[in-house]
Length: 331
Ligand SMILES: O=C(NC1CCCCC1)N[C@H]1[C@H](O)[C@@H](N2CCCCC2)[C@@H]2OC[C@H]1O2
Image (cartoon, rainbow, N blue to C red; front, side, top):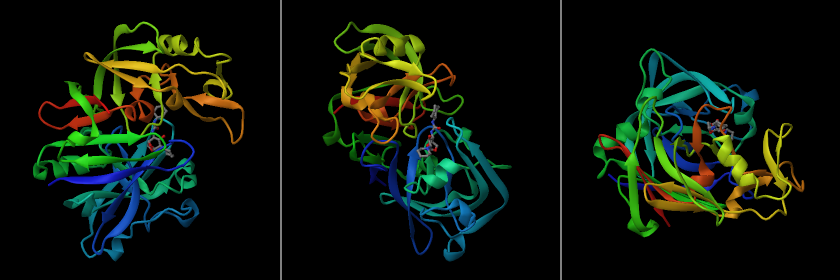
């Protein structure tokens, strides 16, 4: 098997998150899901989600699918790093992304979602693409779509080609040579506790010198921004006129008309440049002259996160061979 599906920004103005069309059940029900390498639960808004918590999202109705089966006595509950979360019951059903089908995928139906999911009407749920060890289904943990699909994929990989303010793609089972330039640099992945954890070889601010120092963090398609150690973040914002670390806005902000340097990060011998445009994430509120930075401190999180702001500067291969590795290429 091989497959390809679009990854479309949920907001035309800035890249909060990306959604991908999937089909579930028989006849197929289409939902737009957020593929998230930072988690390992596949959950959806459903006919079991209270109407008060649904605001325009498409829902999966297992009772309307002739191939759905309740996974008796199983429940799930997840909380994400931003405090959002959801919980519910579990079914199995036919699940397809970009033409790759898993005949019996655990579909976690939401009986409760937190307010940030209710208000985000473009996201109908998530497809966790982390390692299945992170799956929250109890009493028996379930496999991710990638783990289920892997044996039938031409190659046990998926790739992310996210783009700035326009649709990119997720490919499954093959590496599309037309999507990158030069060579792919592969580095080891630490699979404990279940993220795609790798070590970057260093960073540079704008045209400044490159600092070769290991930065261990996770490649997370479900996180909008990059979160790195405070020393790196302060070195970056020292180069931005009027930048401050705002307690009220919860991070580094600066005048939207500031000139921003690029941010360079290393993977092995390779270098990746996040252009200034990606480093200004969004105005803090609509129309404000104050902008929120695409690079923030990881000091409160406990892990460094290479989110969408970094991922969209590269073509990334999530290699599910044993042992797993992650590959980065320019594009
Ligand atoms: O919580 C994180 N990342 C953390 C950010 C802070 C620092 C630690 C990591 N990612 C989540 C993201 O925020 C969610 N969000 C829902 C509303 C629309 C936008 C996406 C979505 O659900 C799970 C995942 O994606």
